[in-house]
Length: 373
Ligand SMILES: [Zn+2]
Image 1 (spheres, protein in one colour):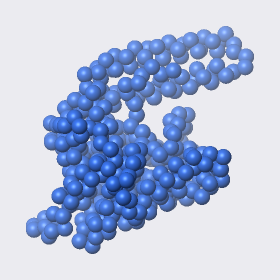
Image 2: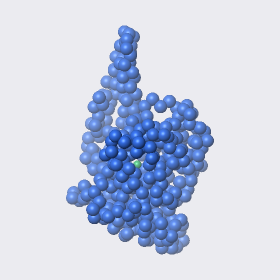
Image 3: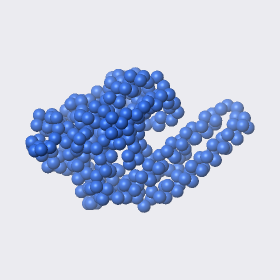
Image 4: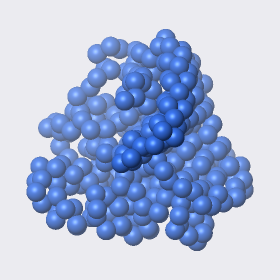
């Protein structure tokens, strides 16, 4: 059993997530620094070069059309593309390098893999996480407001590769354990692997100690950011596609109804989770009670879509729009972090405060810009 509770991967998923252990990578395609961004793709078995080329083009297009010039592009990203995955994606970051895993086709709980085109939305969403995180951490306001978060982030980034190594070794031990007739050589090999695990554990313990002074601030900010992170990531997909239903389309599969026919409660939760990610469904904020981070800000989604994203005054100002959203998030998280009673908010207050900040900050985008973009 892993002993480390302190560090974890930033996992963003609607589904229970299995790590992609054992994924064998057959091709590592070359980098593309055309946009000043080192973009690497690693394709899993049976993933075509054409698909990888399309995904690369997609990220370049998202960068050009909605991220730059107001937001900074994350300087280095590796996108791993397995053929299918029972989970959507996971992300792992250092301060300048981001790792994204998005399958060629989504396939959840035995359902038929979805059309690869729908997975574009998931990649845009994951890229949105990288963009927000990078731009927050590059902002001097964020750095000076949350120095311990910054330090904690760096220590945590050192933990990731060690945790991955540990998981791979544990897997090897598990495989050896399941052999029906273990030979003395097998037992010796298991012992050798166990020694490596112990060695890694000592390193992980030392890093966990290093993390301790930053843990409180790190966790508070990380928790607070969660709701806004998912919101921002979904907005990147929506603003790029100009389609308020794009996340629902990417996630919903009619087969869930038969796959989960024996678990009506789970089915209802799953379907509701998908529906709440639509931007064209008005929700009453006064009675809203969902706290799950992908949907906690859903009333604000419909609000932002109705008054801003679909408003012609804001058309073709996507980069400035997303930059303003990032600044609004920073403003809100900073304000909340300074007042104990604002750290944990119920969904009604969370949404109302955020909508009010949006109304303060967004109208300036619609005004003509003199001498600028
Ligand atoms: Zn996410």
